Length: 253
Length: 306
Image (tube, rainbow over all chains, first blue to last red; front, side):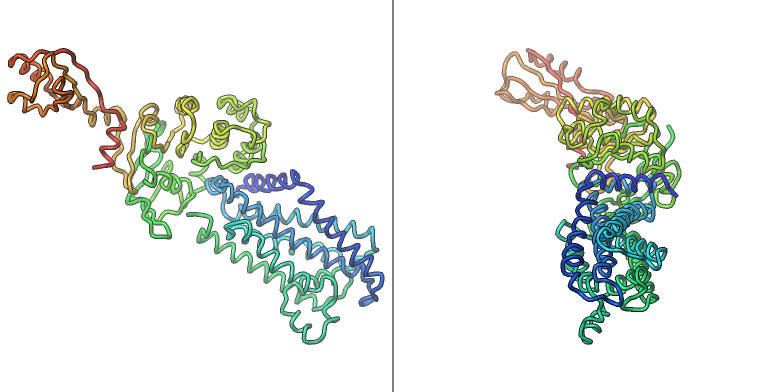
């Protein structure tokens, strides 16, 4: 295995984020904090407790999920799309690197960035509300697997996109609505029964529920269902990437 | 010289059914500079792409140092460097970081001494901490070469390295390429500047429509294919070529003040002595004689047309 090569991609991608620190780190953290102030502090103070958890604390897992999913997709998709756009993928393809190693480099860097952002949001949210995490190790695991999975998804989007508009279509038109409607700011039990059933078709519900379970021991769906959902999604992304590289789709001519 | 790259029965058909390379066979010798000449769309870049791993192979085999470029891609790519045609560089990165990145991709640890020497050789040393976007096109071209050489390859592919660069820089590039050859690097360059091939190549391959029309040593190609033209100016203009001289297929021009005689330089007899003695025999007097040799460009055009 070409570890040096993987590390080269990883470091290069991380350095790119450091060059654009405001866009990479400050912007998502600030946006999340604004959500937190508006929904948590301003509106949340007038809300009832949900399953014994204050509304301000209740939305923290959902906000972290919202941000890390968006950031994972954005970082990984841009990470591989930008070399495609400027024509520097020739370097990757002509180097003694396997496709798996290329994916590990890009997805690893994207997942590291979004994981870091998730942890920073968690730490800063403590400035607003007190949070006790019941299952901290599971929380870390779930956050990490979510970052990796959505980075894999972002990598796929970056590969298949032909322009910047396509790069933004999936995050803006699919992921954002799914996460917003997936219980980031509420429990689906608050919805009428018909909409509860509809909400269960939304995969984001299972991810947010699983992450919230790690924090408070409560969730909209059983925890094993959440774990199964995220692992299935991970496997699906890996399968698609494997297929892309096997066929050289939009990578090799 | 040993064969370092061996291409056997290579065929490349793109997904849109475009046949880019048709059953191509080529052996590249260790330490040589081979120039692949051909018009746009001839298949030069596709050929390089298949060797370097940028394009898949439809059929045939490519071996680098007897290793298959598909099955043993790690080992073959380790000794290959590629300079693409486009100025494909991350604009916001520093020169030194970009070069280090390329070296690391090849699994090699940083070697500041080697990289500094490389930068000096390419006259990039004082630019090493500058951002790529601030560099001129010529400097960017040098950065691409530095990146391709960062892992100390034995084989360097240069895809139209001087396309769109000014004359001075082109000559600089030729010097760099010659220097690399002296360091033992095998160089394969594609170009459609005939002058470039004429100046630096040891062997020349001509590609058109995905076919390798010929590969030959530059000097022997020029000698074999070259035609010289003898321009004979006459003291007294004539109306037509005399019957006795018709066997020479002369072309009368300049209102009868001179004629042109074509002869092959590689031929055993040029016919010049016989022509001049026949002229003297019929009383034609010379005013002046000039010769003009066909260039590689004329040869290239002739081969492509044929």
